Image (tube, rainbow, N blue to C red; front, side, top):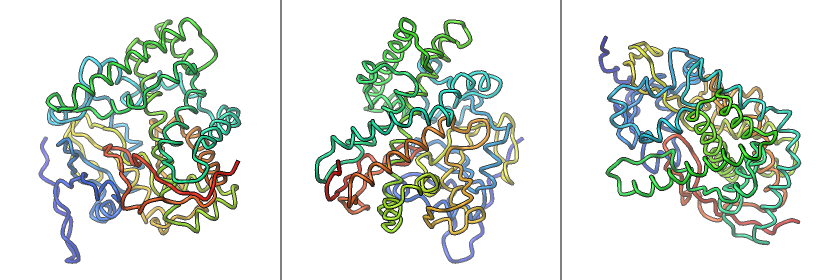
Length: 424
């Protein structure tokens, strides 16, 4: 079966029709994708898009369509489903590392996904997170203690780049001596570069460095097993309940996916508050608002802008659009979270919004297992920074912020701020 090109969206004469494919690239798009997402939602739920790598994919933009797609068992996550067109340009990790590090939960379908997910869920329950909360608060306070007594400061370098990893290390049982040696630069391996790219040697060096680090973690836990997530994963590997590739991939996912999105979400949340000083003042003065406010900040500008690849195993209709088998399908969580058909005044930051069924953590079987942990981290991070840094504000015009070029995520590479003083 083959599909004709999708019809161009109707033009009411007030604006130019959307291009086909819609390019998702460039600094204006990364700084503020929401005007483009609004146009796409108005024109229909599914659009062909173009990424910087040259990959053409199908983007789902509306809330109802996104919610349905995230729960659609026709859409699988395993990269083996991708067709040759996708594989020719997709920025995926090269072999042999792809087979060794990319068989984690994000790229698995049932029954493998079901079997593997059960090993991690207990470590991230709300009850377990609540038990660790006092320790997380200590970590946040220690980082703030190290900030300059008065601004300016970079809250990425001084806080957001460290706090999520420290929380993760406590949660999964990463030994302090190994945690101290983690290189945040290794996280960039999820943004592969092509074989002819000048940055390829540096990319491969990061990849090998991270693989060696993962091997050290497994060896340490094998010799010094404790009652923690990493020890349990290594023990499951020794019992052959996880293959060596699955074990390494799950540790890889914990180290990379378990921290960078929270780092980015701290930046997007703070920027949203800086742009809404009345909301910032309310949250600073009333910490009881934090749980509901965090969910609204997640909805308003999510660090997980787009989901990872999904694939249909046969040519199919997706919300009125024909999508060939093996083409990549991606859901825009940010576009869904600003859909006016689901959220009244979606472009308004309302810290007391309820209900708030946002999709910032996804939906369905791939719903983020660390959602409770991430919410707690954000509550502690925002509450601590606002309480201990009176007068917290941007130190530059927000048009000067340097947004991360990551295809799927949102956040800034630095966050220059000023404040009146550091409260002890």
